[in-house]
Length: 113
Length: 114
Image (cartoon, rainbow over all chains, first blue to last red; front, side, top):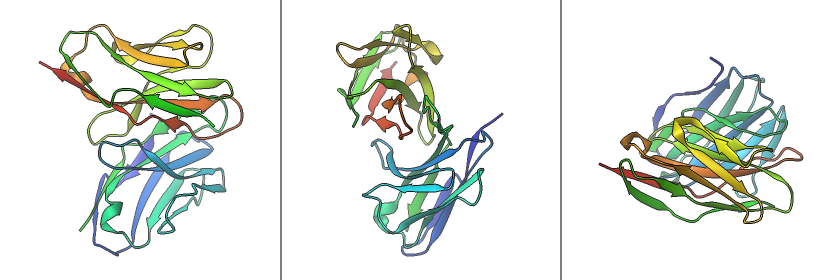
């Protein structure tokens, strides 16, 4: 089945220790998104790639970066995680055409100790 | 710019009772509308979508929603809920021109009580 895969599902890191979350897709979609979701809140868009074009949301902290080495993979790097960065991180994809329905992965739950 | 308002943050309902989760949107352009469901510790799953045509849209798990352009609403309904419907529900709007990310509402927590 075509899908969006996120690894790992659960990640524990230490305060200030860099961490990378990964997302891959078999849908061959042009657009990939990263969202941060804190408890009982809506997903908050951090950034998205349209092909190789990177789009950063204005309020995304500099501590968060992303890489998309090819169509299938996208990475979220948190350079120096703080306690406030503990959250669920969701990856999503869309075709880039209309409608812009988004397909989500299962998420990675990040814990910062 | 578009925006989405989900009027209820929490909705408790007894099992087998009907439920309506409300969603209103604002946009200066024509839109697509979506409802997603999120179970604990999982990603978002598409329940249904309105693209064009019939204003009554049927989705998975017995849910349906009605697009009302004059009231700028897209309320989600189910005639009889099950315990397994307990989850967070998100309404989202997308422009039908250009390519911009969906705008999500803040979510409604549906709790089904046995």
